[in-house]
Length: 415
Image (cartoon, rainbow, N blue to C red; front, side, top):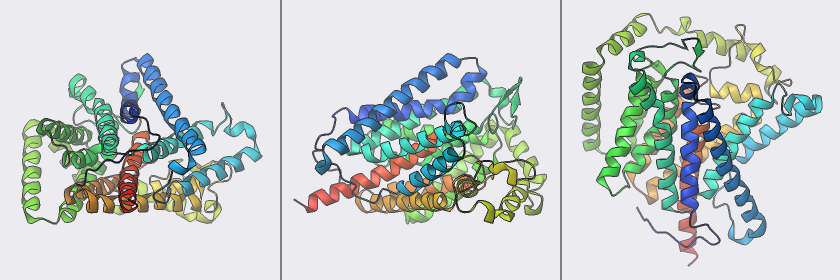
């Protein structure tokens, strides 16, 4: 990698520290269900407060930087998030003119709009604030360490839950299942840890990054998630193809085999339960989510422009379920412009990864492509991956990484 660091005009020398804590607290919020289950509500309040303090401090200072020092604040690539932001604003406005109370605090749509707005603000803030390699390391380390609790808490405190798909445990309902937080962690930060390990010089740090990566996978598999199993398989294949080296194929296959054997030896019951899940059948015709998709697609003309005009998108499902795919979620809630905005962000991420391949290394870009594959493999067939805060943070990391490299190249050409 050309790890050049040019002076950043008007930047804060502690920017990477602030970014680290922003992503760290975002990662900790991924363990919200576990804290609530343990009756540690005060911890959630403290973490949430600190996260929002860092987010709005960085976001507002970014806006002020834009207003006060316009010549020193440039977008070196198209701000791919603008389309999505416009779609969300349009929907907010349409709901507001129907009934202001719907979208104001206490309103029936306030929570969803607040969550998605915070997610987009996080994405924008991270993407813009990344200005040097220190920032990239800070955000990946912050998100990686923050999300570590999503597998440490259940593996250490609740090992009896390994191999269980339970959603309701002792009268507490876990969103998406007891182990779903680890699935979110994997698609949020998993392969980004591998990408960072390719540029970290310290062997100790490399091992820590890879250890977190493996433990995140184990946490997801502990819940018998077919989605994460599919995500792992697809992302590994994408990594091997993108790496373009036969030696890497052999090495990756060997490590995968070792990991598989280790899981079988340590968690034989887990393997048996997985086998039972697939024995029960995975036929497309009997898959409930296919029926859900068909329900929504049948009513496509009713919401394609702006999403459901009253925000009651679940009425298109006979069973009252969400769309179970990030694509239909954007379409039913915010309309065709939002779906285009989502594709724009994915396109921006691909452009960023290609820049990483050109200016950093093939293996770093291969890991980033694997991240994209792991995320899409889950998000296009599940509710998971649409509203999760850490996913948007990870998108911001990749967009910011590509923007930083393009800015660096632009600056050098102008010398």
